[in-house]
Length: 315
Image (tube, rainbow, N blue to C red; front, side, top):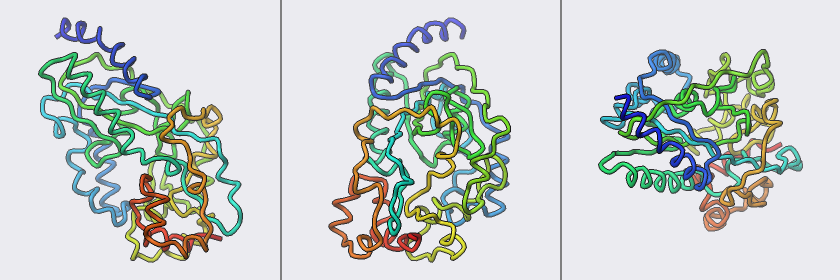
């Protein structure tokens, strides 16, 4: 076993180097032991109904904290991060316009990261013939943030997001499970200290406690996860601050995000028309215009009906 790890460990630097070539800013290696404590917290959260209408989350409660359920013979989880920060200021949005979370300004990150993970998987298959790999980004299969902490990518902040010293919280995560065994990296320590800015600034008071969110009070939940036919509660609308797709408030106030760096990934370059939308423009938008504007964006998920519904958030 020790000899195997030593031999495979020689390839870690090659994998990390190739990961950087693909555009990932951080790469970490984690063991795949089940997360018992986190799974129990998750089940509690579900039993209290804090996931709202996201019923798909109930189906994953048994296996999302055990990588071996996802890939038989799995030995290592390789976790990657990519910076998506754009320096444009969402707070400059004029009155009567809606704001979209930064991650929706460029091309859909799911597609961008999956393409990169596919190449990383091919690289590992070339280095280790006969190995099996499976990769994910923002999927229902794995607790990616929990694995990111174990792999040393960053710590889970009080806003529940992964925070890094180098890039703040403006990162997307990807996970590649492999049957190749590598020496794991040390997990990340927490560095939030006594700061509670993210919890205090949330306009809808969606945080139950540090790291734990009540989705039914979250702006992102109401503008993304709920079906277009569902009416947004008045108390959410009153505190929406004109967010019509997602919300960046708990990131914008985080002190660690003073270390933010503009992304080098051209696919995440913001399209100006996506950074804010006037209420009248949404009202008059037809399906073809919606596809033209958001066809390659994560916003396409909510469809035109969802965007029109969300226009009620605009002040």
